[in-house]
Image (cartoon, rainbow, N blue to C red; front, side, top):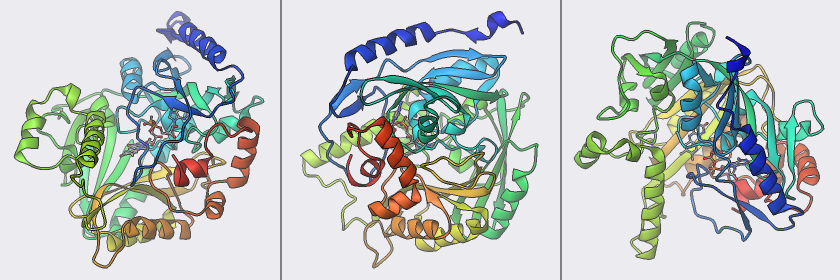
Length: 458
Ligand SMILES: Cc1cc2nc3c(=O)[nH]c(=O)nc-3n(C[C@H](O)[C@H](O)[C@H](O)COP(=O)(O)OP(=O)(O)OC[C@H]3O[C@@H](n4cnc5c(N)ncnc54)[C@H](O)[C@@H]3O)c2cc1C
């Protein structure tokens, strides 16, 4: 392949122009900042919080893939580009992001600062592990280039799990990996967590397997789905129309999807949030594609809860509601994998929803998200309502699994509600390293601290 085709669709000049405009608009900023963007947020809180007053900075135009280098297998992309746009940009060249989050409208900047994970994280780590360099807007209006070996290497390493509290990623350069046209899936059933965890560990070392995840409904009803990249397919299933992906992998069998459908397989049902009713079945069958995605459901759910509050209809989720949210991801070292699964299944009444578990191995520990490099972890995720057990207080299930996770050398993601006090939060999430970064890059506290963002304020 000749060098003349290494950079396809080069939007970098436009990006530089936008950066110059932004720097001049924000020069010497001393006000608190808050980002305005065009896509939905995937930051989630069990209960609403009042937004602090701040100057709104519109980064909506920083939303394009810029260039793909076919020789180096890298992508230059603006921070607010969505994963759907990224996949559409690189897949025609037989390339894919190392990690593609499962919801189409997650942005690359959000995933870098928010710990992006997938069913191949045992091979490639998290989204930020593929980061090569980034342009970051600092709260004082400067835009700096950070990489692993320049004067802003501390910021480069500190971006992971910073949730926009050090600055905003305007552009990132990421390593890509080869992709094929389809992903062939094979699901097996298990009747104990011990057997499932053993099979997962064996599959991690199998070079013919490219993706691994499991759905667990009960201690004796667990499924492991292994995926393989391939260019050959006899029959291809679509995740749209009447197909409900998670049900397809909640029984033993084989299935082949296009690679793009595989990446976003949980998007049309927002994992398993769409209810089962004949009205929703009709919606599945006839709704246009532009309405069959998680961003539409997310906007609809937000709109409905505002209307319910305004009309005093009581949208549920209160003390009397038997259902409560359990939307979290926890990771523990492999020696605690089976105990975590068993503990979660003993603690939670899943009411028919599954837990998702995937193996994860990171090549390096991030200062604000400490994990042991090279060690295999199990990530257990819950993405829906669960039934509160008799005698339990609201969100006891979250608190109990958090405690188990932290008590077993684990860590959890911060995109959802966290109950830690400030001191323990600092111990768990690299507090000293974070404080040094905050002092250097946001000495005037124009952005919230990570603790404020994750626990105490918006
Ligand atoms: C229901 C649900 C499902 C999820 N599913 C997945 C999944 O399948 N895979 C996965 O990997 N993750 C998943 N996540 C986690 C998600 O990746 C993180 O919450 C991520 O931070 C969301 O990014 P976003 O682009 O939606 O940004 P937002 O939700 O808008 O922002 C998230 C945080 O990142 C900050 N931020 C956003 N853009 C930037 C930027 N350019 N630079 C710096 N900071 C920025 C914001 O200030 C905010 O603090 C899920 C979260 C939820 C609530």
